[in-house]
Length: 117
Length: 109
Image (cartoon, rainbow over all chains, first blue to last red):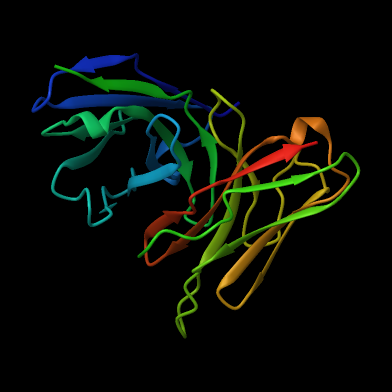
C-alpha cells in the first residue's frame, strides 16, 4: 500500500534552517510528483511547492520561493523540504503529499516544526 | 495566484444536505484548472474527497459530490452524518501552481 512517512518533530531557533524528509513506499516513486503543504496552528493549508522526482522539475509559490528548496533522492524514494531563515511564523505542521497535479491523493503523517528562541 | 475564498463555517442536521462554495477558481481561456476537495479531522492529515471537479477516489462515499460553474466550485454533502464534521478545503491546480481555499468548518448539529 502507498505510504509516505515523514521525519520527526524539529525545534529550531529563528534564523536557522530545517530539512524535513518524506519516505515513499508502495508505488513507483519517479512516476508521481510530491507537494509540500504546511498548516500553522489553527490556520488553513498553505502549499509550499511541488517537485517531480522524474526530472527534478520544481514549482514554488512566489511568497516562499526565496526560502524553500525541494529535492528528491530517487535511490531511496525520499523527498526533502528545506526551509531557511526560519521565523516564528514558520511554526507549523508540515505535510508531504503524492501529487498528480489534478489531486494529492496520499499524505504523510505530518512533521511539527517549532521555531522558538 | 490568490487564495480561494470559502465560507468560514457551515452547519446542518443529520440527514440534511449542505453545500460549501469555493470562489476564485481560474477560468483563463485555454488553460485547464484542476479542482479537488479535502476533508481534515482535528489532528489528522487531509484526505482527498473529490477531484477533477466531480470524481471520487475509491472508498469515498457517494454522499460527497463536486461541481463547478464559472469561477466557483462547490462540494455538496448529502445525508449528513456525525462523522462528516470536519474542516473542508478546496484546491485548484493551474500552470503547475496549487492554491488552497481558507477552509470551511462543517458542524453537524
